[in-house]
Image 1 (cartoon, rainbow, N blue to C red):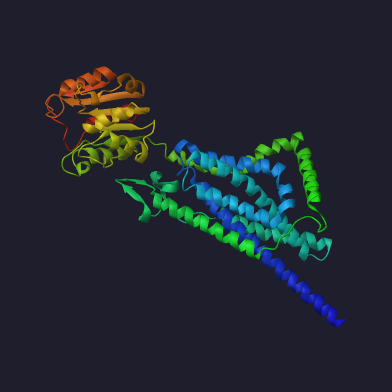
Image 2 (cartoon, one colour):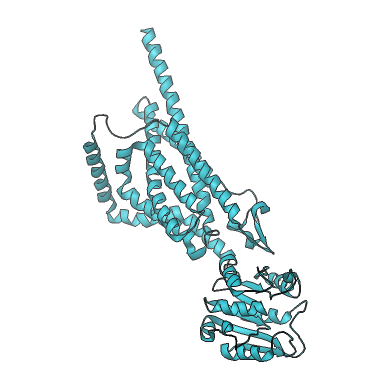
Amino acid sequence: MSEKVQHESANNKGKRSGTRWNFGMICFAYICAFTSLQAVTSLQSSINTDKNVGLNSVAITYGTSLVTSLLFTTSLGYIFGYKWSIVGGQFGILVYVASNMYPKQWLMYSTAVICGSLRACLSMAQNSYVAALANDESENDDDAEIKTRKYFGIFLTAFQSVLRNTPKTTNTNSTQCGANYLTSEHQMQDDNHQLISQKTIYILYSIFSGIICVSIVLTIIFLVQRRDNKKDDDSQGLLRKSLNHTLSTLKTSINPNNLLLIPLGFWSISAETFFMGAFTNHQNAKQRVIIIHGSAISPGIINRHWYKWLQTELSKLDIDALAPAMPDEREAKDSIWIPYLINNLNVKENDILVGHSSGAMAILRLCEQMKIKGLILVSAGYDKNDKNQLYNWNTIKSNTQWIEQFHSSDDPFTPVDSSRHIAKEVQSIYHEFNDRNHFLCPDFPDIINVIKRHCQLS
């Protein structure tokens, strides 16, 4: 009798040890997967801003999670069991996180659907697994309730550890919020404006993906399979039960009161991301001015004349000013400068572009292809008899809200007649001087006044 008691005691001790081990694996898997996912979600409003692909993908994940929770989680839990539902959810999160290395619309949206669907199964399986572990350790019905509260209390501690994973420092520079708040080790410095390099992005998402991969491997190796079905249930029995549960869920959800809870549930889990996105977009909504220098025989023209001075003065007005060093500054070929403006400087419709000499002609050419808020042309000139320099003036005029020009009649490089011709074609506000040469001066207050007037700054 004594040996039997000792044997049962040893079995119970081993069972409790296995229960705690599985519970620890559940918490570990949750922390790894959702810490990475939460970090990536928080960065969507500041990294993947083109066409709002980042925030749209977040909305897709929450939407598909909602649909999957209503229709498929119970079925998948019955068919695959809790262990493989958890692994599938981790894999879905991994796919979405990794897709951020190549943030194209088609890829981000498709992986968001996969992530949202499998994440719902992950949440269902983890909660069900925790409840099953609590029941395993309980000895009676009263004890079961206590154990369930204890296990879920510990599990929610892991949940809070994800939500509390926030920076311990603050940065008051509004141009370096969101993804721009990173150490400068792997950043690309473009004058005074910081852009996140692809190297940094690859390192960041590789780390997140690696964390999830580790949790997947450990879950597969150490987590014991569980499911809410009897051992004698065959595949047809599992499908029948899963279908019954799905229909039962649908019948419950179509209740008018329950239907009203669906948008509330969606918003409660997605609100934080969109509030963060609204904050980041507000911080990044400052007027941006891009200053494009002219061509030069000797390198380093960006550090000469009035370009850097203008950038500094505009920054004092809380304007996001860029004065980048353009490639091919000797010849300033459109085939190089236009793609650089679009792809590298990411010129947007709300930007103001300031161009000097060859830079002025480049932004006119760019304005043939896209809408731009305003253009400031300094010493713009071209040979209208050169077929390679033909411009679609009507398109340029319709693609911008306003154009202002500066020219000097004593300019030795660009004839004043060509600048007057441009002003006539695009109907710009034209400022002509007789003693400014090619505007190779150290400062240019006239441009400040133009920008302040159009931006309604005092």
